[in-house]
Image (cartoon, rainbow, N blue to C red; front, side, top):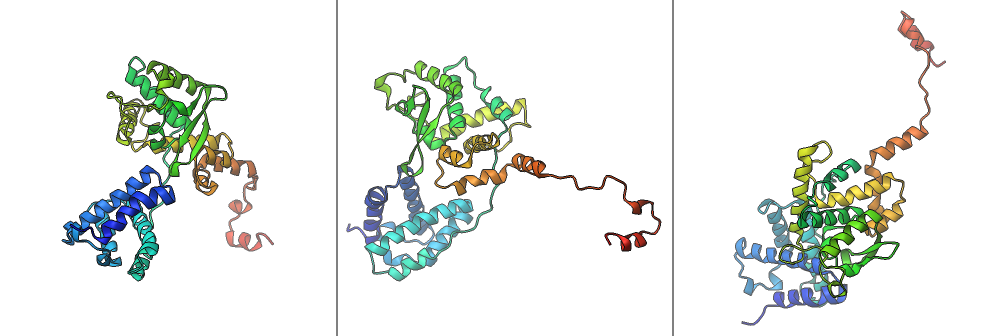
Length: 339
């Protein structure tokens, strides 16, 4: 069967344009791929359009809007997920503007679909006592417990994203002082993050036990499962959830019920801010593209706001009891007040 123009351009977009011209990461390409898998499933199941007969001329702005609504209403996806799907579609139709001009007007209509507003959620993070409690939970008498302690400690101390932890290899660790670790973030951007001595000791003991200090192990995954396979996102989330549950059994006030791996990253950022670390340095540690992104932590930190207000506070309240409280005629006092 002869391929359609839709399959031709989509294949070129995913296999050549994204990795070759934009330098998109594997994770980004996988996310875009998933968007189009769902889009094709929507067209097949909801619109009864056979995938092998889909052409570019069939795709309209209304169809894309219906797909986005379908992801929210029928698949119960969040608004943020809807916007991720839209970003992938926008990228594809921007590509088509230069590759296929036959339906340029329709491509521009699709590109005019706006990103949907989302509610700004408050940042969820642990206090230092909460972090200490969480890191006490792994059983250090077992190999798995020692691995989990190393994983959670590195994740918190570096403020790393889950994928950055998954992609770690022994070659990314500098064992000479000053200790550092290299993280590969979004867009394959690398950054060097300092490691504190206690964290380094935990990591080094774990690596020695697992045989990861050998030169032959340089490119092995740093953290792996019982089958020696690199941990998945679900695997890392499972590990955190296990110890979160144990920690909540000990103290529910320190550990919130809803707490994800990304909250460890938020916790590190907030603790750095509360310790007086400049936002520029926090930006570099977290791998944010702009300090404006990092400013969200300053806006969230009520402790620093209170301390700043207290430093600037001047007591302007009267030291004596107001005269009018002893005055039977309040109206007379009010008329004469402040004249």
